[in-house]
Length: 91
Image 1 (cartoon, helix red, strand yellow):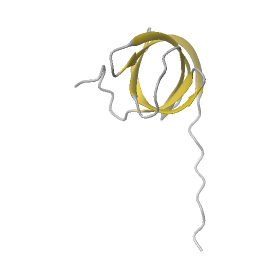
Image 2 (cartoon, one colour):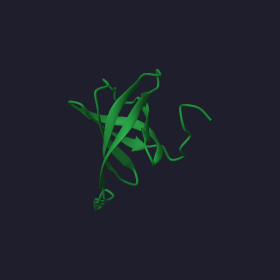
Image 3 (cartoon, helix red, strand yellow):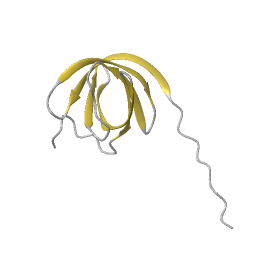
């Protein structure tokens, strides 16, 4: 019998920072970065984001955070950070 391994998710840090949410299609909307961890983020935005969509969060004073949306709940979205930040949808 193989024992299942339990892996705790990394600690999340509440951010509550205003940001611009940039979608792959080029649309930009205001958002609020709710929390951030080593692996992911949660953002509140008026954009209708899609699971699987790449987004970039431009946070004043903190730079750019890019990742892929993994879940949606009302106006909140959670995503996984890209391992190698590339900036706005290009090299």
